[in-house]
Image 1 (cartoon, rainbow, N blue to C red):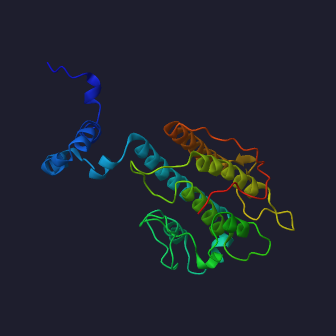
Image 2: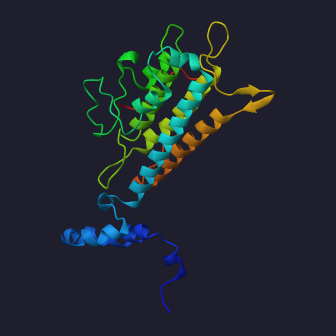
Image 3: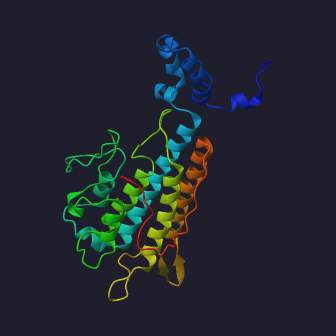
Length: 264
């Protein structure tokens, strides 16, 4: 009869290999080449040797943010099809590709200096290379005649990505700023407020989101923003605990005309 506890049998081989072998290989890197072949049967990812547990948690949250923002973009275009029509030749899939963490905007000549090689460059010619607050202002400007959904999503996604230092994944030597993550959560609250309350000269919202259908409230947009805000607040606390630093709370109303600062 085996002496291993039952919990061991409930873990995947990849999980066992990552947790048990990673610390050993960090202390004795000369073993790495000798064990590569053996580890292939464990589905062991070599790059995880350069990651700690917090890095892996952050990576998963970045992936989840990408999934949620993709959902938001799709839902906004379905509610506002006239906005996509303002960009001839563009489709929802093409817009998703332009803002994917695995794509690079080749129409821009100078990507941000601190961006990773597979990071998108959010400075698009059709938005006059505006990012963050600049792109969001276009989305809710009475004088803007372009695709407001794209402008809003470029502003939102670039702001979120900047809160992670424009990185798509983290490694041991990488550091995050808990204050920027906290600011991004508050900024999401402001963007959500603008989406529901900023209106044109005819008292109509620039972009349709939450609403009613046959008397039933559709709050799916609210839920998406709530999930993203929760992720950013959670990551701010995790990073603050890791850095042994406190988060400075900011009294900043959601109706404010400016977002909290997040450098690009």
